[in-house]
Structures are given as C-alpha cells and as structure tokens.
Image (cartoon, rainbow, N blue to C red):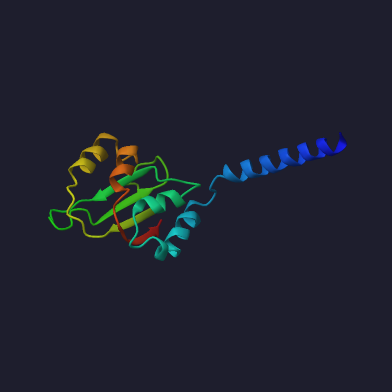
Length: 140
C-alpha cells in the first residue's frame, strides 16, 4: 500500500511539473523573438507554418503586410507583433518576415487586415501558412 501511494504521488508531481513547464509565460518577448532570428537558417526556405508551430510559448497577435504593386512580388514582407497594442506604435517587439517572391494575389489579406484591425486571426494564419520565408529580422 505504501509503494502505491508513493508511486501515485510521484506520478502527480511529474504531471504537475510537466504542466507548469507547458504553461510557462514569456517574460522577455524580445529575447524570445530573437531566438527565432538567431536560428533563422532553420526556417529560411521553409513555410511559415513551421515557424508558427515552433512558437509554442507566444504567438503573434497583430500582423501588417507591406503590399506592393509589383505583380511578381506583391507581398515582400510582413510585420508581426506580440501584443494587442497598436501595430504602428513603434515601441513593440517586431518580427519581420521577408517572403520569397510569389505572385499570389494579396486581396484576401488586405481585406482581412483592415477588417480585423491587423489582428492575427485564423484567416491570416491560413493565408501565411504556405508562404516561404526568405529572411527573419527582429527589432524593438
């Protein structure tokens, strides 16, 4: 009986330890984002979905695309921030993804960004998921 109680307590402690690590919040957003810039070789040439999958502790909250009239590359880059503050404030940690040239129409993302006040919603996630990363830059 004593062994079963010890095993049960050990199991509970292991579960709680794993749960607390999975729910860890990010205290330094800049350091967290910089890890992806430092390891950008892992993501360059790959889809954005891989980067999002690896962002387990903090996901982008806002996104704003740089849209051009170039038919060969209408979407050269997108800014991502990690708070709900105004994306144009300039004081936020910003992850810039430069995209591989792609002639895909940007109309869906233009309407979505305006409609959702630049919030990074499921629509944006789905739009960017298959885009190929050319470069990653982080700044504050």
